[in-house]
Image 1: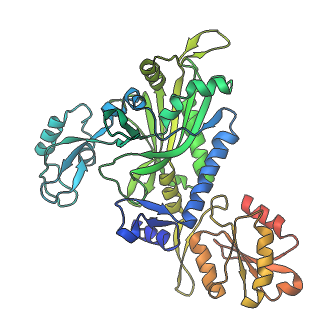
Image 2: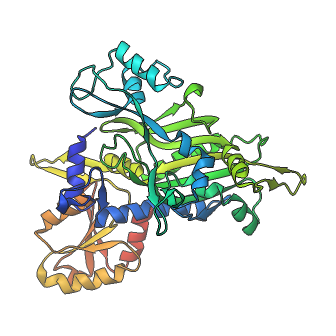
Image 3: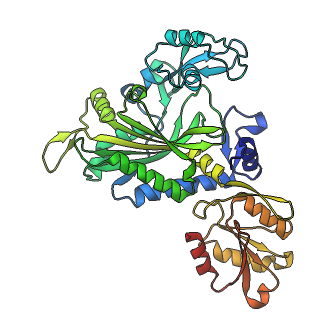
Length: 456
């Protein structure tokens, strides 16, 4: 069942997952701060990605490159000359849009990829493309909108001091290809993984954290021999799907869109969008791209430094080809939370709202709930014993029913209730979030029981 995006956002704000950026000053358009539970979820997802694709992967190593790079990096990559969108304004309501997206949404079968801005404007007028806001067909001229965030470095502000906030993390990997290969004595094929912030001056950010100007990426650049017969593209597609399923994403909400050759990016030989059915519609979740040797070749050309790999078997040099699996951390979190959000009708006509998060990504795996304030000291002693091994919270606010509902709402899979009987029988009650079933467990065997629960 699909829930309204506003209901999901309101729930996440209420329970400390997200806050509006700069809220006390009236906010800053399309900026979001991760609250105490949101940042914990984000950290867990990034750790799981890193463990999966770096720590436990036989091919890959990690990197953390600078946000500020030499401006020539972005000239070589094509971002300085090609990283812009066609901007147009509705003359009626003054809403601002990307001209290509307007055409794609209303005339999906039309190939606009090779049209100039003037030709795009002619087509929009001729076909009477309408404004999604006011439903009128009255758009202004189309002009290029630079997506790069520019800033200054150093004391003197002039042309020489101009640098860019990186629009992607990939180029930091490419310019370090030789350093990584040499220092780690790596043999092709191998991959380099990076998690980091990127910045794009989007025309139309929106849909909560789906599209923001400041975002975090998890990217892999996988280098392989150009004539390698292994289908690395398909291998990485399966790796992505396995990760999504392990994370808790419902694969029924996943679809695939292979880009038409005419609409491929200038660096791409093949691109597949792994999409998710968000409450606002289908949107790209994870990109998988065959970049060939475009990036290494460009950086070799612009830097005048060889980035070729010496094959130890043939003693010949070549520029490796690249497969790039790239996902936005924020989009991945949003998809996971959309899948997890659920409102259930109970027998007494009441409702409970819960987040069905798996224990591997739930901000808290367990909540310790003393039945009475008189039991707080005993329950807290148990909580402190569990803290070194588990993500565990201690909740004493409100009656036991309200505390169950609160833990359901933030995605805690299990609640452990310490009651008066616990003082005598040395047992506690474990409640399952999803089924609401309860089971009495010995405190002595509690750690072993909890280990099994979080690993299921």
